[in-house]
Each structure stands twice: as structure tokens, then as C-alpha cells.
Image (cartoon, rainbow, N blue to C red; front, side, top):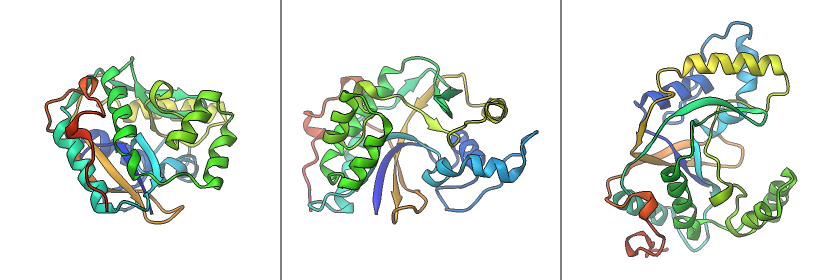
Length: 249
């Protein structure tokens, strides 16, 4: 089993509902969903072009998928989630919009979002003791992505190259798109599909623990945690006693 700490909201949140519909799967129930009809692209092609993000479930990565360290158990990981949730305060972002991220389509922030970046960095550090070291195969796979020396060092230390100053928040909406016509068509359709939740401020009140029962299986929502604390992400530090996990198996 692998775990991941993701930016996500409750099942009835409109952003989640639209994202789940777009990808064609509900990670809360595991059920398949009918994707929206797209002019100029048949249903089978649309499903093929969204296969990878559909498996991972609609989300934004905060702590990338990891196997659990042998010195911890799932209960300790959940307690760490609960501790973070009751310590950190909700924070605001100014908005998301549909953009091209390399050859992928994604929802990304409309501007720099320091609080979101700070919360992601906090998650990377806070949950690190629960992450098992990457296997040689996983490390080699990560290193196939033409990483910079800094990104390679992050992989070696944190298990993921895009953390801290290399972090760029995104909620993936497609596989790699090599056909420009398809990319343009999908982008236009996504902008229409998400128009009620894009381009406007959002109070981020939650994060979620997702699980992958076995390699290659779909990721599902284990628990959505509500942020109820009083420390803004920009003011939080891993040295804060309330953010230092104390329990291991």
C-alpha cells in the first residue's frame, strides 16, 4: 500500500465534483462517472486522454505517494494528519484557472500563492518520518525525468523532486498531450467545465489522505481533514511542538 497527502476537499465541494466528473471517477466511492460530452472528441478518446489522472484521483499533490516506513503504522500516520489539521488555520488563495503545464493540462494558481506553497512544504516535512526510502527501482524511475541537480538531491532526500522552491501546485486534468488540436480542444472544454470555480478566491480548509491498496491500483480518499487550528501556514514551522509527531508504532 502507498499513501499520499493531497490538496482535496469534501465530496460535496463543487471543485471536487467538477474534477471527479471531468476525470470520470469518484475517489470517495471508487465509482466510475460519466465524463462530460466534448464537441470534436469522442468519449473513448476523452477517456484515454485522462487515464493517468483518473487513477490518481482528482487532487493537488502536497506530499507525493509514498510507502509507509516500517517503524510506523497507519494509525500513527492518521494521528499525524489529525495533529496537522487541528494546528494549522485555513488559508486563502486568489484563484485557480485551466492552463497548460508543459504538455499536460491542469488547474494551476492564477498567481504566486505563498500560503499554499508554505502548507505544501509543511506537509513534506511533517509526514517525512512516515515515508519509507525509495526503492532502487523507484529512484531510477524518478531520475528518468531529466532532473536538475537540485531536483535530484530532493529526490534522494525527500523522495520527490518538486518540493520547496521547486514546488508548483497543479491539479492534473490530462495525460501528456502531443496532439496540439486535441490539447486546444481539451483546454477550451475544461475552461467551460470549471468556469464556476475558477478565477475567484478560495478559502482552503481541508487536505486529504489518499491510499493506493497496491501498485497500479486507483487511489481513493481515505479521509478528508478539516483545518481548525490558529497558525497560518506561513507562520508554522516543523519545530513547533504541536507539529512534531510524537507517536510511532
